[in-house]
Length: 218
Image (cartoon, rainbow, N blue to C red; front, side, top):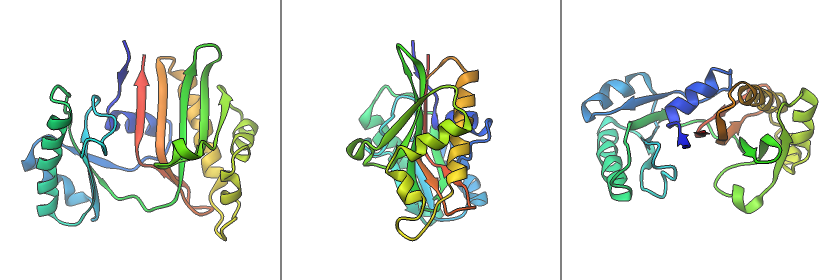
């Protein structure tokens, strides 16, 4: 039977392979919110932490641009209320609080396990329109540095990274992240699916950072 890691577990696993992910705090009670945000800088993002609610935005369980403690407390209660309305039987592990990541080029990086070929790494244009553009490239695990480079160059995304709009993005950071993900998949045969979306890629030399992560285990 398959199960999903919650977002914190997924981020921790990815970070253990040196894949850059945004930091986060988890609160299970309203009283914990004030202490949790002391080490974070406004504005904040808050979302439900539940393996049973994958589409958090549809469930009304994601709030952006939170600028005060009072607002954070209000959103904490609202997230739990909306989660129960969306799925009364959902296991709720708490509320995830994150600093809002600096916007970058939105990329999806992930993995799916093909019944015939085994684990396949994917990358391409990310964000909410990933299913619309379908600008995705695939390679079989394990990936070499050359594979990762060619994988990126197969997409229209590569033109943007190279500076089509006057800004060049960190190609090396994306390539290295893909290689690290391939290594993670090689060493964890029970992973069925990985989805990092968005992965914000920044200007050349500034790296990138994953914001949302989904990992499905066999």
